[in-house]
Length: 151
Ligand SMILES: [Zn+2]
Image (cartoon, rainbow, N blue to C red; front, side):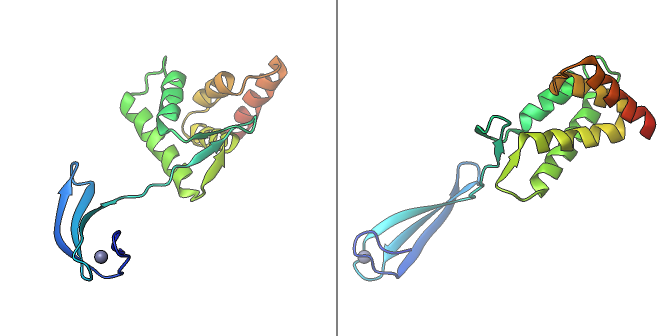
């Protein structure tokens, strides 16, 4: 960390303390060249995942949105809140594991559907009907059929 005053590269840390619930480290430093005192803040640098939507627009990935979609899908289901939450965690984990800076909304949809299909074919159809906007009844029928063939 260069001295902001004289640009000397060597500074000495004179104090270190945590603040803001331990998520930020504040260090007091002193320039070894001119004696200028200043502070640095060290914080975790999380890079936001960007979602590229079908129309090309971009937005920051919000895990909460997937949870809301799942809750809507399972609204009339006996499934407990806990299992929906676990499913949500699993889906978000898979999305994060892609380790990309951006992901298409379509791919997120595919990941959600893949997980739903594994645990509950009926929920899968419900989710598709809510979020994929079937153009025709035939689309819905073929989706339903593809599930009954696999199970
Ligand atoms: Zn200095």
